[in-house]
Image 1: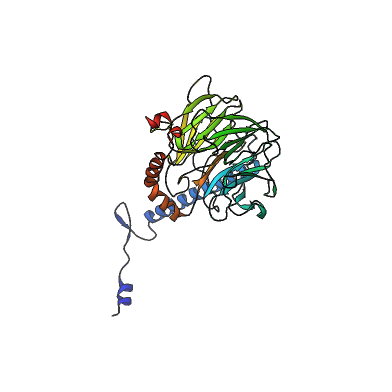
Image 2 (image 1 turned 45 degrees about the vertical axis):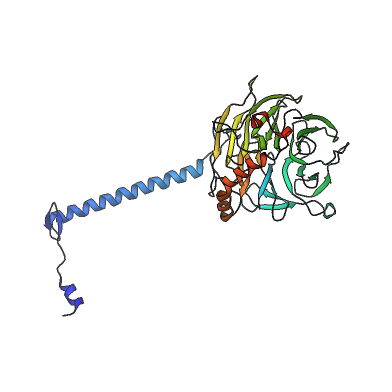
Amino acid sequence: MTAEMAAEALPLPPEVVDGEPVGAGTPEEETRRRRKKAVVLLLLGLLAMLVTIVIWYLIFRQPISPPIPLIPETQVPSYSTSIYGATNPFGIAVSPDGSRIYVSQTEGTRVVQIFDAGGNPVGTMAPPETTGTDHVPVFVAIDPLTAEVYVTDRPMGSIYIYDRDGAYQRTLALVKPIAGWQPVGVAFDAAGSLYVSDLSGPTATVEVFDRGANLVRTMGEDNRLSFPNGVAVDKDGNVYVADGNNGRLLVFDPAGQLKAQVGRGTGQGNLGLPRGVAIDSQGRVFVGDATGQGVFAYRTLQNDKRTLDSVGFFGGQGAADGRFSFPNGVAVDARGQVIVDSEQHTNLAGVYAAGDMTSPHNHQVSAAVHEGNEAACTANYYLYRPEQKSPAKGS
């Protein structure tokens, strides 16, 4: 007898109810069938109810009435999305409506990449060939009066100006040229005055220019700035400067007097190597911290306080989306969103930061050299001239 025949000859196990075999056609079998039918009907009824609810929602749903509620002042951003496609992104700016995102590339093709709100590349910004080839675009800012985009280029000692779609317009021509000018950070106030952090001269400073490119004020001459980077201006005209190598965020009043600061340290809200600065419409200050591997959030200057109230921190080192590898630039749109790219990248609707658009292997390399980078920065500090060192460092 074959295996198939033997298998067919095996009797089927009897069905049971309450432990007793049930024969076909018995009352117990009929009861079991009725129960099955009731369960099936119940499930079909629930399915029909769910379909009815979905159809009702699709027909009668109401759109969210604008404006969309802003993110609460005390809420720390949480990860939302990423934009890829830039090489070593550094500076970043976003149009007020969020429709254009501008990201400077410091490696590869050294241009400013333009993305739309969905993260799709829509153009680039590059200076004319007549200006040479040794370009490194650093920080980016948008003129609130003309929507033109200003890009600093430290090696060339220039600020290039483009229209919103990337067409080169002109190079900023200062009424009184500054010898050895090294523009890095760039920002505007609401009236359209231009603020530039400058590394030239015996000490670094922040310069303020009017609409005609006349130098009207200089800040930080007495504050021993060391490689100031990002600059931002709040609604009251106070100026926030990321004093990078000193590990400080300095706040100057409109007249250029130092009013408050956040220092370097390991406590809540303390900084490491601050780079980009942005301020949203709710009075929150966002600072990209390269060695802190994230973005610190503060409230803008309050009354006569000598420091800023910390709101929180988001990011953290890593290669995953929402994590950072030496973030730098930060930007905010009119809606209050945050985006940081890691080697500069973010995650809050309305704030954008540059720094983390690198490939995974670059993330791994960045993580591997992080501690060495901090040691190198510390060693480099001791090469500064005595007058460049802050009293706290020199003591």
